[in-house]
Length: 434
Image 1: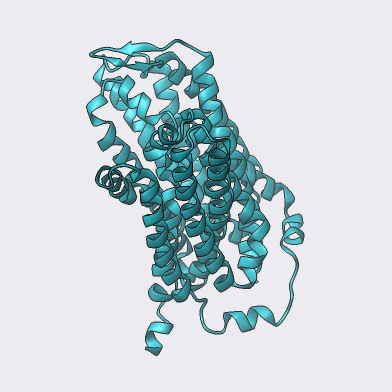
Image 2: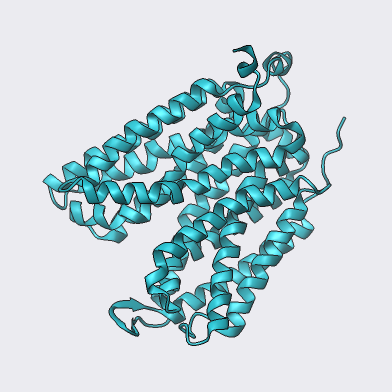
């Protein structure tokens, strides 16, 4: 039993996966968003804000509650379990209420509050809670450790999507709200077990509590340009990733692969998870962890640039090579999007040390909050303003806007280039070990 208490897999890796595989299901929103809209009598566009709010409050709760995570991971992981499960159950309740009162603004606001705000708090605290603990247990392979947990967040969609779809199909009338109530119980159990198991290495708390140390914001002020650079390139990477991922299904249909949308969406989710683990493990081999961001941005610029030059999307699948380039773009962007997340805490620890890493990481995640509001909305705005919708050949009921999707790439290409410039010029040298 004593050996288990000091086992890094039992006290860090497994609980991290239980927490992140639960909260990562927030990305399953696209699977049931239309069903929610139809059930409560609102447009899909109106309900979409629930997801945007969830990502916004994820980042903001991480920023403001990072100090709680720093001081007590048991309190923060319990808050995460309660808020995430309560938010999911509350979402189920207001979907039920909206079904009984079609078009009720109370139902819509209730979903915003529960899925967006309450679940958002659970997301932010749950995301942060295991990260520092993992880096402490896996001191020699910090990137691999954090990548493992964050990969769980990315893989959650691929794991949970078929389960959710099966529940929706089998629960019959009102299946959409019943699914939320069932999953609220399941995820609470998973996260509560993770909360019970999660623990820092023996002796760390005592060593860390012997002196107060500087506040996170004071530590950041020691290298402000570096922090601003990390925040900006993190924000731009997420914004570009969300802009393309939000249009992913329509882009796949546009290049003539309508029948493979489900399979390819799962494949891109695998690349997302693999990028989180692969890029962070790879970063462990570099003296300067910022090198991995240089690689991510160069790959993203190259993949995006090739599709822009070949007009791969507007080609609409008539050229096999161009179609392959579009798929490579989706795979690269998903992998880079995931890798950007998993490398942030370790990059921050290299520059600011481990003392306040949870709080500093939390402040950095505010970039995710703002990207959650701008990424999807930016892409939707561009698609609406440029080009026109046309029926897809052989699928008259499916409308696509190839010019609009292609235009999104022009904007993301520019943003990736800006992110690369920041990466090469603003990120300072690694903090010297004392």
